[in-house]
Length: 115
Image 1 (tube, rainbow, N blue to C red):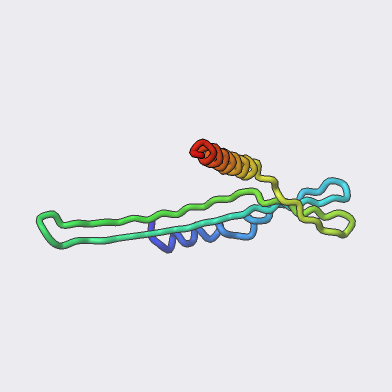
Image 2 (tube, rainbow, N blue to C red):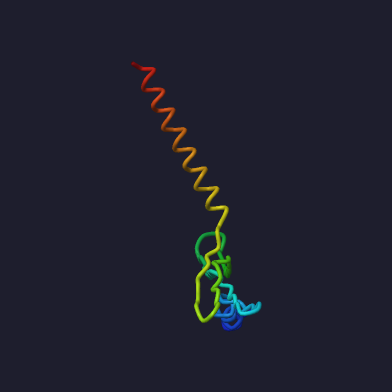
């Protein structure tokens, strides 16, 4: 695959269709799903014409990721943003607070024992 072929295939990956989903209608309410997307690419090459072993090289890659961000809710002519609650972030935040609390308690107990 040449580089132009790769560029053509990646154009669709970052389109607005990937960010905003198809509107969903239920009665007088319309919901438009929204996602956060990210993409990246890389490449490489190389040769080394010295020493006993001539070197060569090549490389390349492309990555794409998407995660739900929330929904726009359209009702009675008003638009409201409803973000997605990321339970993993909440759990991670709780774990960080617990570790900091335990380390602080340990430091206080050690300091009191030295007296």
